[in-house]
View 1 (cartoon, helix red, strand yellow):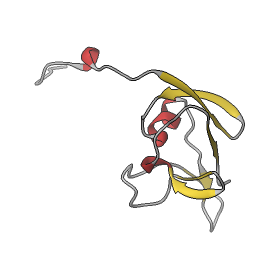
View 2 (cartoon, one colour):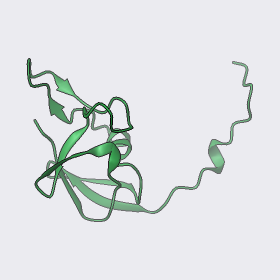
View 3 (cartoon, helix red, strand yellow):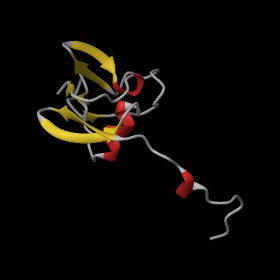
Length: 95
């Protein structure tokens, strides 16, 4: 494969890992990282069910336009792509 731009991925510095939970499962994510990205990194792709046919839904646009990544945090519906990971965050799916 021909690389047209240099690979600078090794120079990326991530913030510290912090614990959070999703549906009672303990996960780790980088502090201040987008929650949807942290969930994807942890292998969590199914965040809610479609209202019509119950099909699994997850993050799609990653910029809060589609509402596919909606989850419950503190009893309120929020787009996971608009929320950042913080220590002790408790997240529940909308399944």
